[in-house]
Each structure stands twice: as C-alpha cells, then as structure tokens.
Image (tube, rainbow, N blue to C red; front, side, top):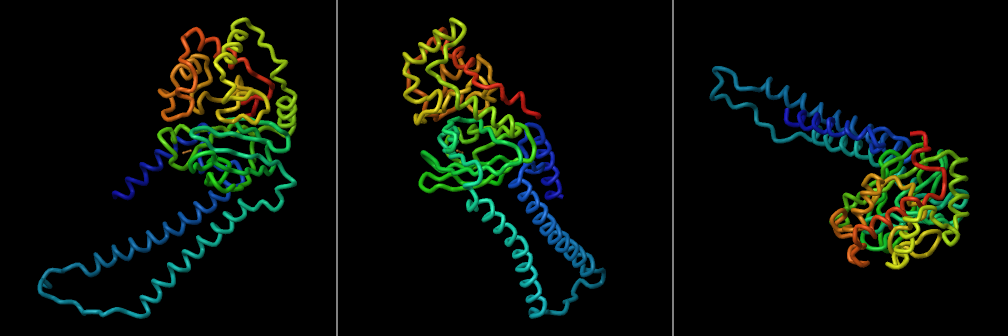
Length: 344
Ligand code: CUA
C-alpha cells in the first residue's frame, strides 16, 4: 500500500511536467525518445519482477499460514536447493543484461562524434549559473537561449569553466556531464519546433536549481534567418531609438559592463553574452522577461540568484540608472526569429 501510495504521488507530481516542455515522458527528440524506450523497458521488467515476488509472497503467506490445531506443528526443514538458487541467480543476470546492453549502446551512440563534421557544431560552456553557446562555424555567440533547426543533428561540445554541471533538456536530449577538464560531446536532434526547457542536472552550488536555459527549435528557414541576422549584427552601428535607451547604453559603457558581457560576437564570456537580449525567453534563466524583473536583477542579483558572479562586480546602481540600462538591454533585438514566432 505504501509503495502504491508513493507511486501515485509520483505520478501526480509528474503530470505537472507536461506544460513548458519539461518532461522526459513526452519525448520530442532523439535522445529523449531513446531514453523513453529505456524507461519503458526497465519499468516493464522491474514491474514484472515486483509482481512475481508479490504473488509468491502472498501465496506463501496464505498457503503456509498457521492453522487451528497446528500450534506446535514444525514444518519440514529445508537446507537449500541448488536448482532454485541457480534459477534465481541466472534470471536476474539475464534481466540485467537485457537492460544494460541497450542502455550502453545508446549512451555510446549519443556520444559518437564520427560524423560531426557534416553537421552543426556548437561549443557549450557551463558556468555558475548560466550557459554559453558558441556556434563554431558561424562565429556566433549566445547565452541562455540555444537556437537549433528542427530535424537536424546538432553536436554539442561541452566544457565547464568552473565546477561540474550537467546538460539536460528532458523533452529532447539525453543527459551529459559538463566537466571542467575534458570536453564531452553529445548530439541532439529535435523532432518538433518549439521552446524546450533545459536544466542543469548536477548539484553545482547554491543556485544550481536556477541554472535553467531554453532550446528554441525553429524551422530550417528560420534558423538560416536567425544565423544571418546574428552574423550581420554590428553593435558599433546599433544606436538605440529612444533617448532613455541611449542613456542606458552610455551607463552600460560607463559602468564597464562590457568587461564581462559582450554584445555581438566577441571572445569576452565572463558573463552571459547579451546580443539579442530583448528576445530572451527569461531573465537570469528563470524570471519572466519584463523590465521590472531586469531592474530587480541589476539592483540585487544576489537576492535572485545566490552565489552568482555578477554580485559586487559593478557599482551599486540607483533606480534611475537601473531603469535606463534595463531599457537599453530590453530593446536589443537583432532578429524577427523569436521564441514567440516559433510554433509552440
Ligand atoms: Cu550547474 Cu547545477
């Protein structure tokens, strides 16, 4: 009964994962689909074992219960059985092999980079507590929102700038550790356009649970458009239209925000790249993209994401300065291919 109650509780919890494209149970990509097959395979096998054990246990409890008038009866004493012991050793070994072989094959397949040259390659860097994406072939840098075309293999070469993180987009991909010292490669392929939630899946510090990102899966045409817009964007030539945003740009420069944050393609990646910031799906990875939230973030990032490196890196901004910088950042939109334009 306890096990049943626990299982129904888990089922209720999992139903909440349907929205937001954050569930491994409704796969929309290759790695997730293969994971789902493994989940079903192991659940069926383990469920079968559970059932057999419970049936045998119930039978024994009922069949050999103490009956009236047998209070002093001593049953036949058995000292073990070679046949039985052999059977219950061999069956579990077979079951473990049935589960282990496909799991291992898929793990190796997802990490197989032998044909990576024919596909899109993106360097992924995990940082406390944000993600950086460098499109090798296009010389494009982004942070937090990863744009990929639907139905194509995309190779991710993952490394960490600090501690161990883990890259996981439950609806699309398998899960891969992101280590500081060696690059791990995994390919992903999304089957449907949409915005998919990604999580860091390795405890990496106080804001580990907030180290969220998004994968934005667009059509091939939209992807090409996005790449072209990102490549053509020249921050030098970009002048904000509104006077407030212009003041914000000046404040951004005066406060030396560029020491950590690049706008446009640049090797600076101490903090997230802010190109196309106005189209970000979230602020700080998980807050709704509103100006109010951005002002709150600029004024006190530690309050929102404890342990992040931005805290204390620049002079304390007053309300007016934070408002203006927020205005500048929110209007940084370099393309019409946005999370909203995607079929979701
Ligand atoms: Cu990065 Cu948890």
